[in-house]
Image 1 (cartoon, rainbow over the protein chains, first blue to last red):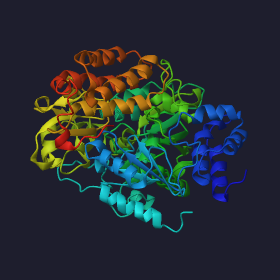
Image 2 (cartoon, rainbow over the protein chains, first blue to last red; image 1 turned 30 degrees about the vertical axis):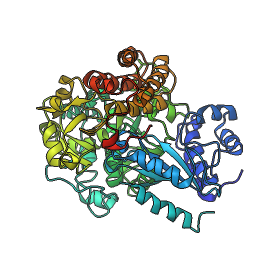
Image 3 (cartoon, rainbow over the protein chains, first blue to last red; image 1 turned 180 degrees about the horizontal axis):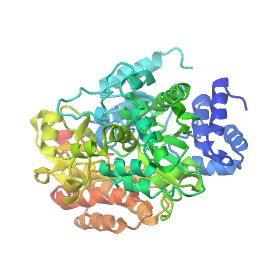
Length: 163
Length: 437
């Protein structure tokens, strides 16, 4: 499997970051950084990571199912994550979530037909003082209202770099 | 960057560089006393460093509040095994968003804290575990680490002292449980983040089966000021048995939510009124959570005379926790709050211990039914009983974290549960347009 030179460099650095014989430690970072590049955790990625850290693919699969950010299915180009945990809830994060579902016509962990946007209701993402919070891929958006979310979605639908 | 205006009532020790131009750069850091504490520590014996941290009365800022100096003293220096420094940057306790600012605005302070801890316990490598959602912080931290290597503050023979230290970032991938220290170590080793049986504690058997100092980001960031200005000066900022300041995250129904650095022992009422700008819309306070969603809630009456420190909160049978303050106004439905908190813990339970795995799911189902108007009177006691039966029966504190707020909400707001009985819709529906979680 081939990756971009930047990702290869990152993998190389990761494999040297842990004590000798402990390369398994690189598994979760490699899966997440790999997912960022190819869009999801594919069978091919699992096999490749397993080979590089010296474990069986089954062992990788066993670990990755634990982590909620690792996805075995392809998500949208823009993954919109809405927090509805307590601090966001107190600031109407639940309304933002409902609005997002209605606006996009999709639900939790679903993808729009054009593959551009996916939605996920997520647990606390560490933006509690600036609630309600939304993350698009890794970008934080604070104090989100249904109106601000509309603008955000319009922008994502317009972006030429998407597909 | 800063996401809220600073407040004049703050005591800015850890956050003193926040807001400076290029505050995250090594040049800014060096121009503002950066790495001076490390150089001072090089001239001290390891025992003296640990003693200074003990004198400071620094207690763990991740939630448990364990005395940091004591934790460091448990590491067996004479062990032939390598020792490790591990930074817990998994910040995921609902209500908490402070470590994010410490890394974003002043990553070198964290590096310096790791270096001093390394000197104290003879460790020469460290890992900064950062939750996966904080990807931009990993980039900031990696950049800071690269700068430190380039300028000789990491690597071999640091600044001519003969001390070697390597530091790495490690990303999580979405798991609250990995904020628990032993689960974090499992995750660092490329495994599912389930807790380890203790003892042995990480100080003796931690990362890669070696002695390990594992502390929260804010705890490590407190170390350079302690060594630079002396443990006594840090201790004097706080209250007896708890020194220094706490980055406090005001969240919920306040006019000026934000992260503020306050002296330990800061009065709760003053914090809400003068730092947080009071409750939004001039409403009354109904409930107060001092340090993340796992803490028992306090009623407005219980907040009278309370101060933000470990002992004051312990007297009120709750915890200072992580500093994630959650403020709920008079219109808040406490059944819904209990439900949302339980939904979180049910989602995050790792499944290792049955009382937690089954208990959180069962409670989530009952609370969902209850909030929906389908509850019966017996359910109210059942919720409390179930939660009590989780307490102390799990390997890690996640079970307790789910049980404690639930028990307190049922005990202190029982009337609200009764208001939902007999198929009645949520009585707070009009106030806040409830939707089902």
